[in-house]
Length: 327
Ligand code: XMP
Image (cartoon, rainbow, N blue to C red; front, side, top):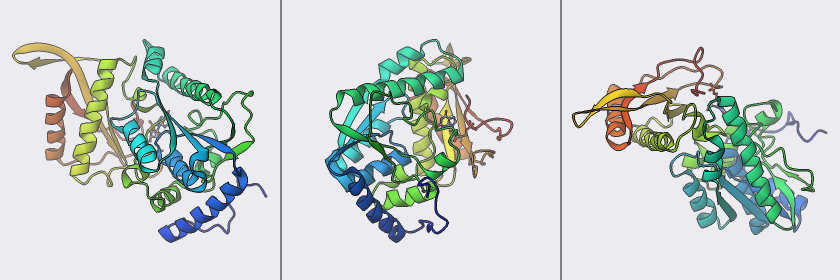
């Protein structure tokens, strides 16, 4: 039988008990598959790769080598969280690579969104490959493939998964312990493995990260404003109890300025756009009505705390015709 087809008899994992049984079974299978060999895993900090990392650490401990590439387009505190949870918390064999300069240098003056995506995806694979080549004795490649990835193999994530490894890097095989699970099941398994809700329940974050929210050619000053405003938005939504109620929310810093006044002088600064959507499958989306007082508080904080910003907007556009992301 094709191991990429979910059997009709497979029970949906909805409880921690069912997740525990799944984990026990996978731990056994991974140990049988891997023996005393090593597995390499690109750990982005997203739900899927994080759950696979935690599962493989449980199964084979230090035989798992995780590589976390910080492409400089992560949200505030994201790479730090990966290090804290996996290296400090789970004692993982984790290699951290800060490739910020490399990515941002490649992206200078690149305006076209799809070209930006290609550069980010391609550079990610190259950095990961370079790191992998330095390591000795790795036999398997771990991957956070989930069932929807198999069903829609040309889905949005495809470019970001580490599919294009060079032919001279011979792996005996792939280790993909959650490849037959749906996203909600992966989250339950993550909880059963003890990963925090902030990681397991996190909203989708595109592979190219903040790169597609700093529209047009990315500059470091706008990227900084984007990261800081996004952190404020997340903090205030969290305080207001909206994190579980809104499907995806983030800020965007476009590449046009507008006039403002600061300390009695005219300035020509960036706007910050707040984007929040509710959706079932991301194919269409509606915009939630956020309490005015919450929006006002976020606006005040962004204007006071984030440099180079003189205007805050709330995007009221549903999908369609607007997409969720601005690029
Ligand atoms: P759009 O903007 O097309 O987004 O309405 C739909 C969902 O897909 C996410 N998205 C991406 N995810 N790589 C990804 O991994 C990408 O290049 C990408 N572009 C959009 C977006 O955040 C939303 O959840």
